[in-house]
Image 1 (tube, rainbow, N blue to C red):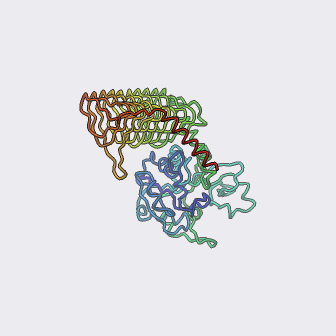
Image 2 (tube, rainbow, N blue to C red):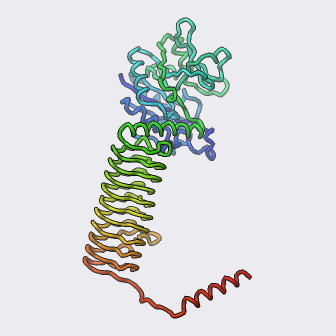
Length: 469
């Protein structure tokens, strides 16, 4: 059976209360990942022949964040979910198979549940399968209305249309549907708008299917959290808490130690090897590949990084970077801009690296900025070194060889090259290339003025007193 998917993400999400409603609700991030991409990822293991995302409000921005392997169509006028599904007509209308329709604001849905829905649809030879849930206090949900004697589904009644007798119904619509594809588009063409708002609601098709004798059944979701949809920022935070718990549990069951799950935030797209320890107040977002036997944190932020094995990264910020094996990072290091630390290195206190590549055994221990630079093996960079790589308009590259010693307080004015086994004297400003084995010194002569300090302080004190008057 061919399988297709339509994810609805066109609504404004006005209850998110963004400025001028500029941000589409499904573009808001949870653990650094847009809401809609959780839904895209949930359907990916189903091996759909085609996945279509319907965008509308904020379409251009939303297109930038939607995950790969999707077709995108636009609902120009936001006039209901039925009309939104109809936007996929040109891509799907004549195809044999089944189409799953689901909402882009439901990030807690799991691939397992969706796969079971498809299995039931195919096994029971349904024309429509509805995902439902049974809730003890189902206030605010659309109701599944069944025939009293046969228990067959008759319709989905919107909560605004419910009458008093409907409030005893505990089975509710969870917002995921699998249709026979050809029947879906046949009935979408027959839909009529409601009288109140002129909108086309997808759930009206359920009653149309029933009245025409097609087979409509439900699949009851085992974990009703999966049907949770996001409409405001409080619900956004709740969904984030659920996802964070799921991710942390998965990693711990895979052999990762998380010292305090309540203060640890890890994206679902992060892979971490066994025996790595994640300490408190650490955040790991984006596409990260982290090896085994590392210590990360406390108070560390990682995003889009590749980290090898046996590293220690504490109180540090590492983004868009690679750290290989057996290195010490931090405390208070900042590594970014596609930087690479090859391994067996030390990037220490208050060191910043940007677009830098350091080979094995490099030591950069304190208070240093390394930008647009390549450093050879076993070089030591002294405290307070600065690579001056920017002239206000352009960035320039610096090449430092292996086995060098860059003295404390050295300023290197890029672009230039420092050869192998070279030495720069502390406090030097280097503006010319340094060849292999050379010692570079650039200092003005020191002048000591007798009583100069006393005169300076006296003058400064008098100025301070004068300012008080």
